[in-house]
Image (cartoon, rainbow, N blue to C red; front, side):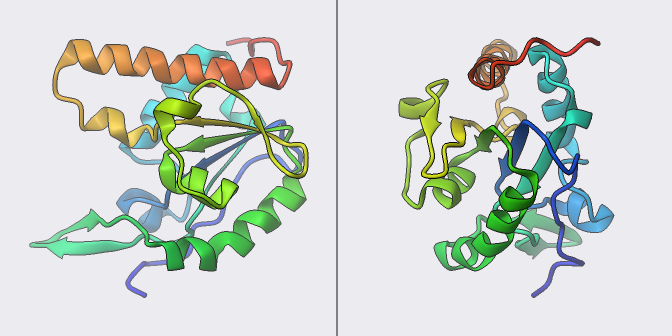
Length: 181
């Protein structure tokens, strides 16, 4: 209701990888493109470190609008509820039908819930490919915005390395060699 615009996914018409986040953030809502803000910069770096070319990847979100609350002049993210996830599921399914990726990476619990239809625990599913009903492989990992909230630098570097390892597991599940940088 209060978003500037819907933010559809973007990437090649046929991509081996589809990355699904939670919802657009403030920068994405204003730009109309997914993962262009601070979390997007972390995602870009991690993809590169994992040997996955972003330009060969379809990037989208489970929910297509930015849900937020105002704090002064700032628009702060609010987690989408189950109703919003279900209402936007048709758009994610349509993107999947069009792109037909071999491997999907769910970035966070909202994306994983949208793709599996159930609440999941990231720590129990990380790096383990799960086959969805249509045969697509699913890898579940954290959302890159989680890295922005880690204050301790050592903890942040360790979490980033784990995130890259998750993306490398997705690349391996798809049977792909590292992209050339």
